[in-house]
Length: 408
Ligand SMILES: Cc1cc2nc3c(=O)[nH]c(=O)nc-3n(C[C@H](O)[C@H](O)[C@H](O)COP(=O)(O)OP(=O)(O)OC[C@H]3O[C@@H](n4cnc5c(N)ncnc54)[C@H](O)[C@@H]3O)c2cc1C
Image 1 (cartoon, rainbow, N blue to C red):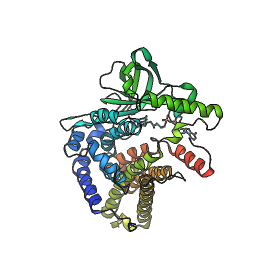
Image 2 (image 1 turned 90 degrees about the vertical axis):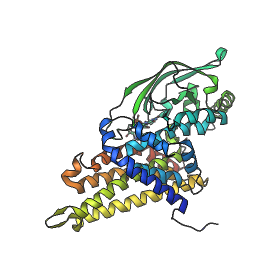
Image 3 (image 1 turned 120 degrees about the horizontal axis):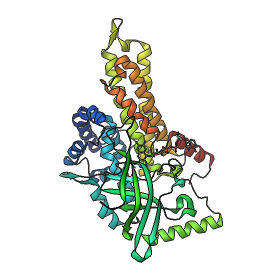
Image 4 (image 1 turned 45 degrees about the horizontal axis):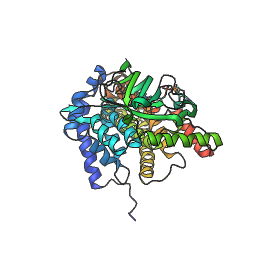
């Protein structure tokens, strides 16, 4: 039985320091420029690929870290560097997880490496689930996938929205309805291979924050893909649908709202991103408070400022502990009996919004300008309470779990 410890081991510390170096030396100096340009920072992704920080191998290694802390530690450091650039680097992971979670070994081996490309020709992947009328309510999804048995092909039609890397990805992972009667149990995931006719980028969104990360609609018009692009394969899907139909008939299990069941296990990772942004803003504010002088003394000498910093730091540490607990539980195979994954995402994302707003306050007028990074960090922080399930949906999941009500 290993000794209880909150300390990262030596290997984790060296990985953390390595990511921190990249965040500090490469991401930070480029952050304001890519925020203004509002474009995918391809040269930075390429730099990350050159050192192995943008690769399937690296994320797989962190994912399988037996303590569970590899992914949260990675996310915190990257998002400490800059949230928009960091999302451009880790956004492909969302699509990769979509394939890893549902695909066969052959599908994983074929498609996931293509999402990343290589250091000389970097690529990105996109995960497309949300739709204009199906955000929190994933069960309202309308994109249809119909099987053409004669050709062993699937035909997809619909419009996806808010897709990170949508339209610029080599590989799009698309969730679509295969059996409308089964609600979210009638969904399946598909690979759309590169250059498939019928897939196009719709509107690219001009955003409040994380502007270096590309977010767009993805339009699917009679997109024909081989049967082999159904993740998990046809016979597994048929079995799953038959089971769901049987349960629906016998009333054994309610057809769920999938938004509320969106992988609990991925939520701590978003919590860790929020911790990274919050910590970055706190550090900036602390430094500023020590050096900015008013009334003949540093502003940190005023309890009104110092107490804000004390609260900021306390909340960041508390958020990290919730994230680490949930990450450790997920990797140890412990079920989230009290929705611990949602708790960590809820608390960390709300903390990031609060802490970055306090950082602006401590910077005074300077904090309100684009000359100082806390303004960008505050804009960036607003995403954490929205994507991967809004704060309201997290509360719904937590409350229903505590009440013993079904969330799936
Ligand atoms: C920058 C960005 C990147 C994204 N990346 C991706 C991506 O890569 N892939 C992807 O598939 N999606 C992505 N999303 C979509 C994201 O997951 C959705 O925006 C999110 O799930 C919320 O859906 P919605 O925007 O439709 O809001 P809505 O569901 O319309 O919610 C609007 C408001 O109503 C509240 N609300 C809704 N239902 C309830 C309820 N039952 N109880 C209480 N309050 C409720 C919400 O909390 C929210 O405050 C991204 C979004 C953004 C902004």
